[in-house]
Image 1 (cartoon, helix red, strand yellow):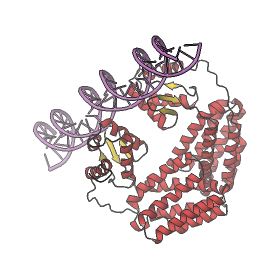
Image 2 (cartoon, chains in turn orange, cyan, yellow, green):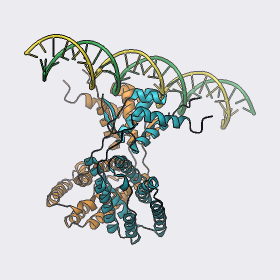
Image 3 (tube, chains in turn brown, yellow, orange, blue):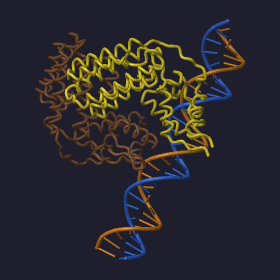
Image 4 (cartoon, rainbow over the protein chains, first blue to last red):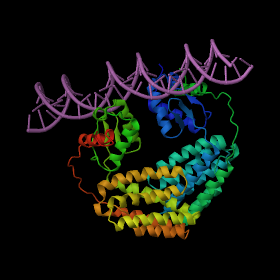
Length: 236
Length: 236
DNA sequence: AATATAATAATTGTGCACAATTTGGCGGCG
DNA sequence: CGCCGCCAAATTGTGCACAATTATTATATT
């Protein structure tokens, strides 16, 4: 009856919860408990936890355990500084070989963004806003760069859950637009400057926001999510 | 008598051998054998191998084992493309806030490079050439960027061992110089262009070079290195 | 009553034995 | 002669039991 859960599924689920900021920072992840909830051996969970630690989504303290990272504003700033550098390089390179096809692709994407904004669909807007940056990264055709961007974007997403006042968690469409037009002119310097100020603007919007701990303890959250995982369709 | 070897030491040693290209590409790393050579349990080696796999210095094939990566010319190209993007972003950002102090620091460094080139000290030249790029990365003050650069530079170093004709494994000092002068003018666009062509020039110098397999099997190499590790000073 | 100290419990880390998988070789069959 | 399937050896993967470490509680002492 109860479906067995693969290691990859555990990783995906925990990763998703962490990136969405669903687990309070500082929460300790006890191997035994999680293993019990998933109905799986401790070693399985152990491996996943160590991987998440390597990816900096968990703080791993030897002999002490794994804790949900508690990103400080300082760390947030460093993340955005890194993104300014990397994404500056990305648009600079893109401008050199910008094609009309890419131009159309980007325009289409931004139409979706505007539509979502017009429809006031905030979750979708947030998703698309982040996607814009990943789209640019993938347009370089460099999977290495795409991977590095993914790492930074993931950690940024985690931050946003704790530092973005709800009304501001979407990139301004106009700012994306200005980057796109600069690319259209194949003006790499301008595109890089636009990207830079864009990221800086997001950064200035960051401020601590109280987290509601209601029903946000590890066991209840994980329990609920695991229910959804092992009973994907409706109950018989 | 025989010193016990820590996990970190195993990682460091294997990592160094891999980056220096001392292990023939495709070589299979059998957990049991390595554990025996180090005089340590298999689990210890296992963890290190998985980490090296995550860092892409080993190819990890499930249920098959770990192999020294065999970088194709194609992968080499992708690596340099990624570096063009990332390092372009780095110098672009550096130019914005370039200080006279940084200018002096970089000039001093290049003096060392020239001295090493003049003295025909090839190993030192190679080391300094790579260091130039890492120095720029660290000047950004972003540890995240420094880390990402380290990853790319490490893998580049590994490539160089297999694809650089011996006479060309050092960056041209003049090319570094042109980057530095562009930075001195705080001309980010020019610096990025110089960096880009510099990396492209290195890339075009790449070509397959036959590797001498003499005494290059895993056991003999590791055995020798481990000897040096456990008997650091002269034998009594 | 507050602090230091020792015993106890909870948690992570490690080695080992066994299970699962792949590889290479051998013989039978078309 | 070649090809397919099967068995045996080697290797990786996993669960479990125990060791080492850290947190917690209780106790004694000033």
